[in-house]
Image: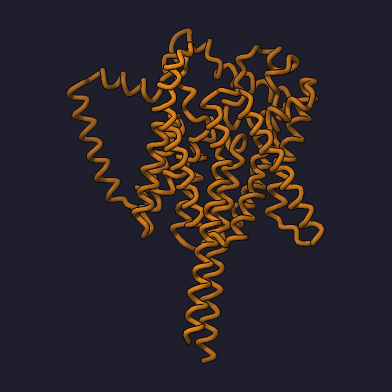
Length: 435
């Protein structure tokens, strides 16, 4: 009896230690996926090329890891569909993108590959998933790792904003741009943390941790990311899920907001409207008078539509502005093809984009069907709603591969835990019948 108790306590201690190691390793991977190390180096700008070399080295390591994983599974005859999907998706995308740029603009493929290289962050799946399976991490463990990553991001970014300007000022460096102290890619990390914390606070029992995650994510969005589009999309998705999960709270909050808005209008009048428009739509003046004709993004939209129509909706590839034979020569350097969202992604691969969307939806649906807990379904639905709101202007795939690796990781963890719980319940029922 005593030996059994000692062995049980020892096994539990090893399990806790194993879980802690898995959470720590997953946190490091999330910091890499959300480009914390890249952003930290870019904030100082002491070696401007170092962050980009780090990104290229990371992508090279991901390619090597993915090739080894796929080759090992193929040799063992245990190749999984989801691994094949995450490997073929960026490979096919890059092949089409580089090929179309070569054929349409006579641009060397290396330029198109360089321009579209961030699609390779889909390969983070081959780093995320083995750690989850090796350490048996649950969806709660993954969200805890994300929360720790967001806290590291927030503390480091605020410290840079407070300490670095004074240190540089004492060195009398000219032309100090404080905006460079804002991390380059924290928005997705903070937005996901905010939404996961908000939904967890609404539907789960771990309200203290979920509330802390929501607060950290919101502070990060407002103070560090400072991206209006991400912040507005995250808040909109959060409000929708508050209405779905707690309609009475949403009604009270709406009435309070309406009363506050009416009081503000009564006190400040047109001044408030002007300040609100400037805060939410800082470039609103571009859409009046002659300034619309000079709007680079509107001109880009027209160019993309015309080129796709003239090319029978075949893709034209990821045309690099660094190459004189591409769009820089034809339309000047103010061609922001990356800023036209889904249309910019269609510009790269044409009607093949529909095939990518269908393949992605099929793989996501398979994982979604395995999720049983309502809490997990609501959380993943909130995250997808957030990215659907951003898709018209930011796109859904380009530069966001690591996000999809994270979403599939979360669905895999939630689905596998549900399957394990169902298996245990079935075994218990069988034992009860036998007894």
